[in-house]
Length: 79
Image 1 (cartoon, helix red, strand yellow):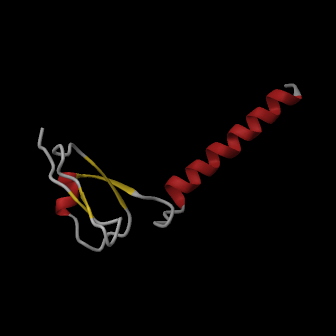
Image 2 (cartoon, one colour):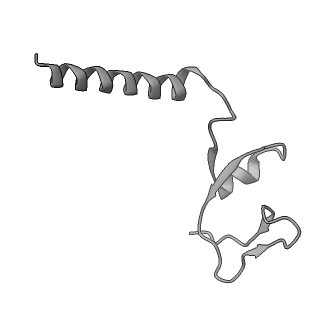
């Protein structure tokens, strides 16, 4: 193998190993954010710190709190 192929292979192996470590071994909740559907979120407890929510929102139903920009309410549409 030449130097370019060897270097590329080493870099790819290091990146793949690092991604595997972060996603499967470390399990640090500060690094990851769980993605929930609306139905999953309804079943969870209220002590969740960081989440992402996906789903269909009823048009013009999003209400962002003026005091706390992170507090949002909305109506979901079931499909």
